[in-house]
Image: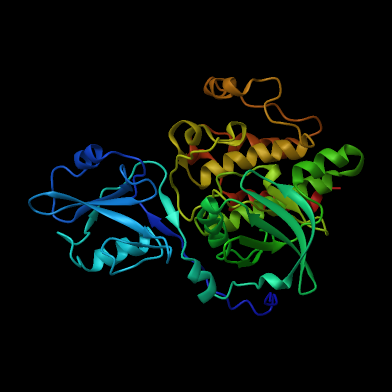
Length: 390
């Protein structure tokens, strides 16, 4: 059952960060990272000899010990000693931070990974926080989108049109639950609303249905003959309003583009696709492909994603709006975009773009992130422009 808009007493589902998880490193590499040995210094890595398992490497005063973390296949839980069991690595480490419980030392100080910090979500937190929807309440209709790991269907849920993202690859469940976790903290008229999740062997993420599709498709299919200057500045204002809310909550989107803004039946624009969003500024290195034409130079080159890198992306999105959905940097090869930017090149205004809007674009594309405007200030300017648009 979907709670009504007037009764939103549901809690926020926290993301559990794992700065101590280093992925595929060798035993020898882990021991180098743990030098000089300090009692309680630790890290977690993927097991070298037992694929699918993990290893907790931890220092005592005298030695480095390596503990195999196995998955109990029957209970689908993690354990070191077959006595204490945990849903995920974050829970396991939290236990051994509080009590050494048979280890050579308590986990005291993590060796922090550089780059992408892994996150996990406890599925039970969705239950406890009131976000569960029953599978039988979903009546599926047509397929409206398909990706490598998921597909999106239009559906009905207790009389309401909804969109349902179905996670096809169980190995990607945590990634999609992390996206849903971020969405549980967001309540704003210009952000796509999470309605709930269905948990089980297949994960379903249920959101409000946006009948007019993505902003980029909306721009391309309607063009200048339908979309007015008033529509354009309103799309810009709506998107900026949603992003100002993320900025205020110190949530970095990391993938802002017209393809990730959806249009409601009433033509309100709402930011969506929080799959890369995290509730902090950080250095982030994704295993996937970075959308270079939308991403700030410091994020492409150094993995530094902040609210100010989102601001750069917003400038690109403005260019998309006023070019009616053209791909940015036309006639420039993808591999050459960064070198052009390094020489000071910035895209010229699209035909018909108001000077006031192009001025905002130019400010978002400052090389120094600190010189870029914040979303709150840009929103004020866009609201003023909306009041004068015809």
